[in-house]
Image (cartoon, rainbow, N blue to C red; front, side, top):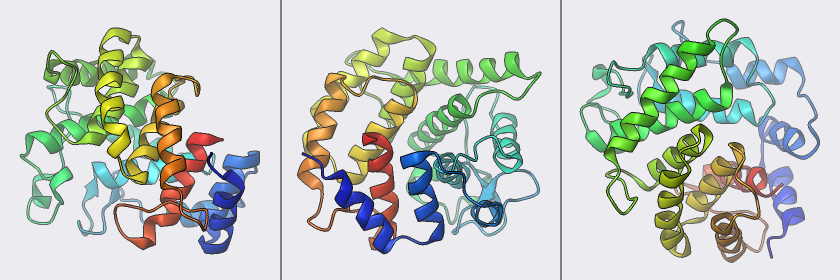
Length: 265
């Protein structure tokens, strides 16, 4: 069994003020103070996206989606900064329904965000579409918002193999699955869930938490068989101090633990 109290204690002991505010929102819906929300939103480019630490001042699809995840955990997805970022994401979609980082980032972007790379393009497409789903449309933009998500879903569906697997990173699968589930493409979503279930026993804690939280965010039941498998994996990978390991270094362990708490709450 997952020890949720120990996970909460880990975040309280090791997180910063923003992390603890995320925890409070996830546990009780407590709204953070305005100055803390402004701190979480800092660094936004004039275009609406956020630059990545590796990308100087150029807004990044990957970094913007990461920041939206943090803001979502603070109950701030409807604040002006997040709405501006969602508008930028929508306007950055390519005519083929996909997303790609700015060409100027080719020399510095990591593999999952590398311009010109097919796997990265598919990952960024599912990631951006997922956050458009979560964020919802701006007033008066309902039709175009839905069309953007539909174009992204079609691009992802076109990439699927007959067995439900996909030619990109593992995370692409569960984000694409979440988008298809939201749109009612239940057969394709179920195919992907079968493929993901085969991978869960060997997944890292961070991947398991991300899968679980993303699918719960679009309404998949916590009692779904895939999420039950993921819950067992989180139980197996929880550390004795209550936290879970990140795949990106110890400095992100609190973030991984918060993702697990979001999934399990």
